[in-house]
Image 1 (cartoon, rainbow, N blue to C red):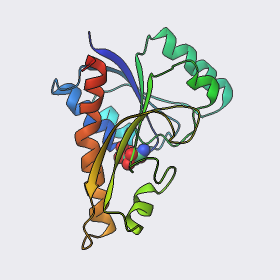
Image 2 (spheres, protein in one colour):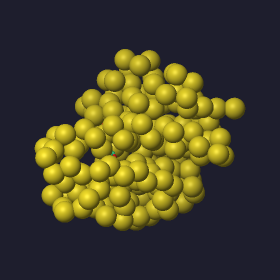
Image 3 (cartoon, rainbow, N blue to C red):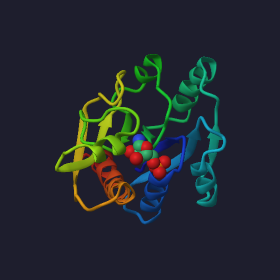
Length: 185
Ligand code: GRF
């Protein structure tokens, strides 16, 4: 049985697109119920509509979040997948879905938690940047790690080139990692 998922995004939505394409290609055994966003202008929503996915926007305030919890339970969503979702999930939300909320972060956590992780990693002397996929807990980018992928640094590359390598790594590995979770591999 495919896992029923929702993807939460706030911006570009390139990870959502990669996941949707992997579902369509039969590489990710999931049924994307709908794409959720706090941002009605998110580019990712337009991309989702073009892919034929259902979308829903909600302003991120307590009464709506409580309704969302009820909706996700009523719809029997198995996993809540964060892909560039720029709002904090409150503890009363996280407690309802233990080990069912998964996030991707563009650094080798615990390094560079929070915003502008790629820029901070780029400015460092680190030999590697990377990507982390983790369960979401009540902290900011602190939940239990599921997988990490290194991206080697090259002293010649520009920030834009480094960003492109990080995003490529995300797009290649988010779906693969989710597939392992969904199939218990
Ligand atoms: C990604 O770098 C992801 O790791 C971070 O936010 C970015 C979202 O990009 N959490 P996109 O919206 O999927 O293009």
